[in-house]
Amino acid sequence: MNGILRAEQLAYRYPQNEYGLQPISLAAEPGEALLIAGPSGCGKSTLARCLTGLIPHLYHGTLRGSVWVGGLRTEAAPLWQLSERAGLVFQNPSAQMLAESVENEVIFGLENLGLTRQTIKQRLEEALAHFGLQGLRQRSPQTLSGGEQQKLALAAITARRPPVLILDEPLSMLDGTAAADLVEHLAKLTASGTTVVTCEHREEFLCDVPGLRTIRLEGRTQPETSPPPSPFRAGSPGGSLEVKGLSVSLGGRPILHDLHLSVEGGEVVAVVGRNGVGKTTLLRALAGLQQHGGTINIDGRDPDLGLVFQNADLQLFNASVRDEILYKVAAPDPELYGWLLQALGLAAYEEVPPLLLSEGEKKRVALATVLMRRPRDGLLLDEPSLGQDAAHKSLLIRLARSLAGAGQRVILTTHDLPLAVQADRLLLLGPEGFVADGPPAQVLEAHAAWADLGLRVPHWLEVPERVVEERGGL
Image (tube, rainbow, N blue to C red; front, side):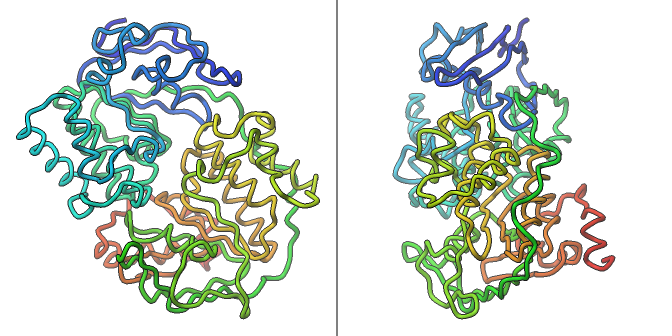
C-alpha cells in the first residue's frame, strides 16, 4: 500500500477492556475523500486516534499493525511532527478546547506552526468568517453551544491546513445549513489536495462529495431489534406542561426571551433551530437547572423532568455502567434495570467504566441513568442522536413513544431532521421564539420560516408515512 495515509493490519485494544478496533488496512492519496461508516461502538473514533498518532502516544493499550502519515510511522515519530501532517477534530469538541477565547483557540494552533504574524492574522480571519464565528471571537469556548464548539474545533484545525484531515462525527451537532456548508468546504479541500477522512453516521450529507470512497467497519454488538416488553405501563396523560414568558440571559446576553410553550402528557415533541439559538438552555430551564424569568409548571407544581445532557461526559462519573445506572437509586427496580441494559444495548458493558465507551454508548448510559430514576412527568433529550446509528435512533423513537403511551411527555432538541420528523410535533425555534409549531409535515412546508432563519431542509428528507397517517393524512 502507498499513499499519504496508510494503515496495515491495524488493530487496537484498550487496556481497561477488550474493545477497540478490529484489524483493518487502508490507504488514501492526496486529495482523496474517505468515509468511515459503521454502527455505534464499531471503532470509528479509535481508528481516528490511530491515524493521527494519539494512539499509541496518549493511549497505551495493545496496538498491532502500523500507520504511516506523510511518510512518518506514527509509533516512531513524535506527536508534534505528526500534528503538522494530520489534524483531528474530536467527536466531543469540548475535549480539545484549550484557550480562553474563540480567537485564541484558532491562534494557538497557528502559533505552534511558527507562522508569521501576518499569516496568522489572515488565516484567523478566514477561519472565523468561514465558520460564522466572527461575533463570538471574544467568547470563552466553554460558554458556546455544542454546535458552536464543533464549528470552532473545525476552524482551529482547518486553519492549520494539514495535508491530512481526520474528522470524527463532524456533522453531529451542526444544523442543516452548517452541515451542508461544511460538506461543501470539505469538497473544496479535497479538490485542493487535502486528504479528508470523515467518520460519520449522517452519511446522506456526504453523498455529493466527489470521488468519496466508503469503508465500513463491523460492529462489536448488535442492538436489540425487538426489545423486551416495555416496563412503562400505559396510562392517562399527566397534565399539561405550561411555559409562560420564559426568559434567560447568560453573561449579560439574552438567550431566550418571553417564550411560551404548552406540551401535553403523551406527546413527543422535537425542537429544532440554528446552532446557538438556545435549545439546550430551554431544556436546562425545563429541568430546573437554569435560572430564568417567567413560569414553568404542570398543574401548578414544578415539573419532574429527567434531562439527558448533550455531552454525556458531564453526566457520568462512576466506576462501572452498573454503578452509574444504580447510583443513589433507592430500592432500584430489578425489572427496569434489566430492561434498560437489554433495550439500550448495554448488557455486555455492565462492569465497564462508562467513560471508556463510545460517545453513542455513553449517551445510552446517561439515558439509562435518567430512566432508572423514573421521572414523574417525562424526559428531556438534548441531541439524543449524537453517536447513534440508524438502529439505535429507531430504538430511541420507540422508547419515546412508550413513555408517551404511559402518559409522560418527551421533548428532544436535535439537528437530525430525519429523527425530528418522527415526533408528534415539530417546533422551529428562532432568536425571537418559536416561528413554527405543528405536525412535522406541516412545519416542513413553512418554507418562509425556515428561510428567515437561514435553515435548509435537505431535498432528500421525507416524513415517514406512519407519522403522516397519524397526523390525519397531511
